[in-house]
Amino acid sequence: MYDNPFIIDKPIWNNSFSFGKRANREIYVPSIIEGDFIDVEIWDKPAFIEFDEDWNEKIFFGLKNFVKISWCDIPVYVFDNHNHAFYFWYEFAHERKISEPLSLVHIDEHHDTREPPQYLESGNDADLMKIFEYTNFTLNVWNYIIPAVRSGLISEVFSITWETDLINCTVSGIKGNYILNLDLDFFSPELDYIDFELKRNKILDFAKNASLITISTSPYFIDQDLAIWIMNRLFR
Image (cartoon, rainbow, N blue to C red; front, side, top):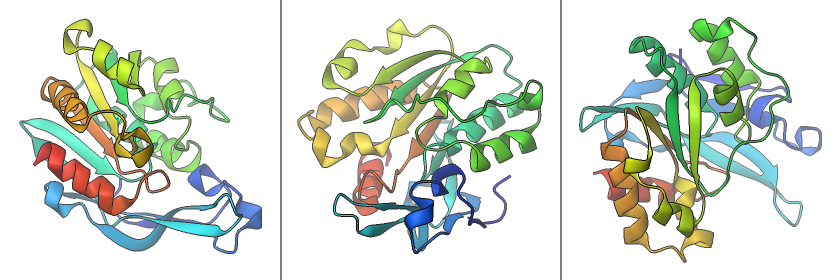
C-alpha cells in the first residue's frame, strides 16, 4: 500500500496537532522499500510538526523510506510515526493467513493506548485498503493499539515503559505468537537511567522469538540520528 509517497495537508491523523496555529501545515508519508537497516535514512520532509514549550513551531523530519527487512528470518518494518504499525500488523496477518489473535510486546516511552476518534468499522479489517486509510487518516501516534485489541487482532498487550517492566516481562511469560513493537524513544535521554545493555539484551531476546517486529523512529520524541544509530547498534 505504501507504493508511493503522499502529503497530508488537512487537520487529520498526526497533522491535527496545533494545525490551526501553525505556519507549516503539510506532513509527508514516504514509500516503502525492501532493504536492510543501513537503508534507513532521514529525509528533508516533515513527518511531524508541533510547538515546543516556548511556543516555537518545530518541524520534525521523518524517514526517506519505510524499510521492510528480513532479520533472522523474521519480517521487520521500520517507519517513523508509530501508528503505521497498525497497518503492518494487519498486512502480516493477511499474508500469513493468521486467524488466531497475536500478543503484543510494546516497548516504548509511552503506552500509546488513547481512544481513537472512531474505530474501524466491522468487516473492514478484511480489507487492507480500508486498514491503510484508517491508519493514515484517522489514527495517530497515541491511539493505534486499542483499535487492534478491539478488532481482535491483538489478544494481550505486554507494555514495557519502565525498568521494572523490562526486568519482569519475559519471553516465557508470553503464550503463542507475538509481535515486538519497539519505539526507539525508549532510548531517549530521559530514559538513560535504564542500563543500555539491559535494554539491548531484553529487546534482542524478545526480537529473536517474535513472529513480527515493528520499529518506530518517532521523530517527535527522539532525535532521528540517535534513533537510527541505536537501531543499528541493536540489530546489525
